[in-house]
Length: 286
Image 1 (cartoon, helix red, strand yellow):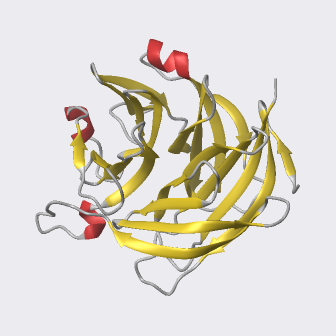
Image 2 (cartoon, helix red, strand yellow; image 1 turned 45 degrees about the vertical axis):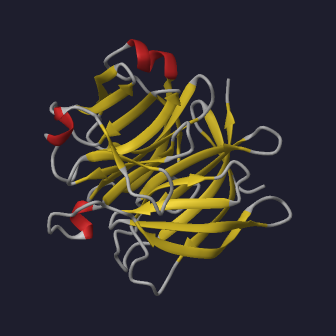
């Protein structure tokens, strides 16, 4: 076991981390990821329209130590209307649906698309007109499946100064919700933690304070009962790992039923930033 950091309602144990690098110019900008239930396979999306896949490697203690058999595939699109991949395929979030298909959130051209698999063409998921009115670079950053036919999508922009827009998308329709904003931390991804809670990764950055990241939790029943989402701080990642632009989050169950958390950073295709994939074990404090 690695270093342990305790927060208001949880503790994180560092279980390994790797820096991903490649000479392939398509690599970078990872903004959302899913990990298979056995922890072996990883699939991520980039903000220039690429799927990145590979097999995760662990040591005898079950800690993350590497990645092998990595590959990069283009995200299929019916038409781009002359726009570049950077504009038309700016993928920011990824989640598996109940049918094991892949739901991707895009910004700039704000939308949700569902892919049967990484080589298929997508079909659109209807949200509502408010999504298209979000600022260019402030679209949906987090998507999480709450249950059969219930998808929560959280944007990092909105129509109010201190609240971002979120959308509860159900078979019966779409409900607009509000997500709190404190002038620093913004939601960057979400994952189902257990039957009662959603885990949200929030990143923060400004020139004065620099970069930071934290995990907060949402109660699933309150999401479905209220138009304003409330969150509870679980743990601040500062002090446990070096900070970067963490944008992707996944949670799976370990062999003993423990919560295994993966986060990935978006290097923005910049030499000054890194693509970090880090694994933790999350202990819930009562």
